Length: 281
Image (tube, rainbow, N blue to C red):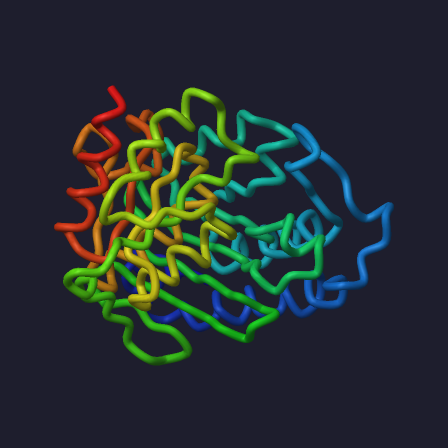
């Protein structure tokens, strides 16, 4: 619980480990017991057959909402499933209160199909700035954290993305075709060019982690739901990377971005991908 005169930065120094514990407990209680054991009645569609939600999503988000709210009184929670139930919840990202941004199961489709490529994403933001993030790939037992100005870590080891190897095609994960309109496909088509090796993305959170680890050079995404991006973008930044929208400005978790946008392991790669995306204009 935050102290009466404590700043958010001081809260993070004291309680970041408590947040990690809350994320681990939610996954242990609600996600992992259902992994590869989902019954048909535990899976529903939202907007269509590629937009799935499970009991694990709903129950993990409910538990995280309770536990994180108790850790930081006065904070609010913007979770993917709460926003699906009531879109007005998303407006809290624009407010003055500290906001927890939660994706309980990022990569639900992979989770439903028994693939371990999913994770739980939590970020803490205040007035549009992401201050800390927690990325937990529970089935892989990997936990990444980032605190603004204090670096990014995976299982306690510092992450440094570094520049891509010279002379090699840039590895870029792009919005998956199943979730992309014809117009967005046109914008992303510019990446199919010499020197770039694009592929469809999996879990956004795990793609950001791959950038922070130097295993992926960039992403190019055409949607801006904060729960998919807030945690990973800070992880990339704190590992030495950066992000740009097609307009050349940094991505804003508060929205109104010029899409698509990119996040990359270094500034030069981000500029190159953003320039390619602009050629679709």
